[in-house]
Length: 281
Length: 324
Image (cartoon, rainbow over all chains, first blue to last red; front, side, top):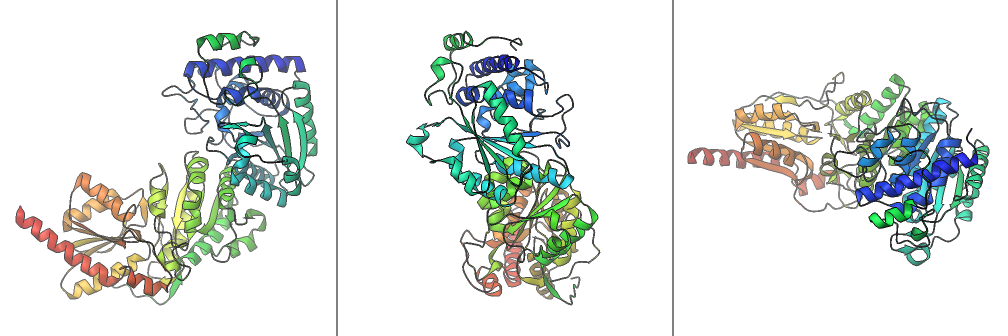
C-alpha cells in the first residue's frame, strides 16, 4: 500500500511525462491530462486490482478502466507505462509514425492496457457498462471504472448510458466526470452549460459523490468511498473537481492549454515545477 | 435452367430469430441486445429462453453498440438487433470506433433493410447500409437470401471471431435454399451454370435472379447465376471465374447502386478483368410508402428488370467484341 506522499511523487513524475510527451510530439492535450493526473495515479497505484505483467483483453477477475475522453492519452500512457504495462521508454514515441501510442488510445496497435479505442467523445461509458454486465454474467466481483470529461456531457450517448445504468441497476460501475469547466472553445459556461450534474445523475438512479481530484488524500478517500457504495443497486458517479493544467502554473486557469503543445522554453519552465521521482523516459 | 421449387414463403428475420436461439443453446457466451424491437427482430424466443443473457436497451442504439462492444471484454458474443437504418447510419461512429476499429466481436444484426420495409416509407428504408458497412476495414458484410440461409448465416457468424454486419428483411420470400446447409462466410454459391451472362445476386434478389433465369432460358439464354451472400470479403475467385466464361455481368441487390454489391463487383472487374456490367438496384433516389410488391416493381427490382439488364449487357458484349 503506497502512502499519500508516494502517490504524490508518482503523480509528479506522470505530469512530467505528460509535458515531455506533448512537447516531443509537438501536439496533444496537456491541459486535461495534467488535471486528471492525481485521479489516474490514485486509481492505478492505490485503488484497482490488475495484472499489468500479463495483459489480457478480457481482464477477468481484474478491475477495468475505460478512458472515454481519449484525448488525455498522454496521461493514460504515462500511468500505464509506470504501472508496468509497457516500457516507459516507449513514451518517447507518442504520436509519432508507427507508434503504438496513437494520438488517441486504441487497441488496434496492440498496446497493453487499452481495451477499447476512444477519442470520438461520448462512447466510453456505454462500453464500461457492457464490460460491467459481462462481469455480472460471469459472477466476477471486480469493478469497472470510467472517466469522462465534463464537456463530454454534451454528447447525447452519455445520457443514454446514464439512463440505462441507473434503470438496470448496473451497480459495479464507477463513472468519474472530470469537472474542470473547460472545453476547446472556452469555459463550459461560455459554450454550453450543463447545469448541476448531481441532481441529473441522482434522478437517473445513481449514487453521487463529490471529490476534489487535485488533492491526493481527498482523491484516495473519494475513490474508497465510491467503491464502498458499489453493489447496492445503484451505479456510482464521482463528480471530480479539477483544474485544467494542474501542476504547471502557466497552464492553469483557462482552456487555452486544452490541446496545445509547449515549446522548448515553456517545457523547461513546466518541468522546473514538477519533481522528477521515477526517472524520465 | 435448374429448378428451385419451394413450398413456403417465410421472412428472413424469422431465420435470424431461429438461428439466434440455436446459437444461444450451442454457446453460453452468446448474448443478445435489442433496442425496443424484439418482436420485429424475432428475438422473443431468445429472450424467453435466456432472460439473463438478453438486454433490453430501449430506444438508444448508440448506447446499444457501446454496451455490445463492452460485453465482448470478458468473452461474450453479443448480437445486436434493430432495423437496418438504426443499425448503421444512426450509429456509424459507434460502430467505427468502439466496435470495428477496436476489433470487437460484435454481430450487428439488421432487419427491415431496403424498400421492402414498405409502408413506413423512406425514413426507415435504408438503401446505403451495405456501402457504409463494407467501407469499414475488416468488417464482414452478409446479406442472406432466404429463411434457411439467414438461419445458417446467424449460426456461422456466432463461430466467427470479429465484427459482422448481417442484413435481412421484413417481407416473406420463397424458401428455396436447403435447411441443412452449412454457411461459409465469403464463399459464393452457384445456382445455375450458364455461359451467356453472369448474374450476381445478394439477399432476396437471388430469387428474382432465378425467376429471371427461367425467362432467359425460354429465350435461349443461359445465365450463370451466383449468390453473393457475403459482400465482404468478396469471393473474387468465383466472380472472375464466371465472368471469364460469360464476358458480361448483371448485379442485383435491394440497395443503392452506389456502394453495394454492384460496386464491389465492378471494383474487382476493373482491376482484373474489365467487362460490361449493368446494375439492378435503387438508382440514387429515396424510397417511399407502398407495399413491398409495389415498391419492388416501381423501383425496378423485378425479374423482368433483370431480364432487360441481361439483354442490354449482352448487346454491349457483342458490340465490344465486334470492335476488337
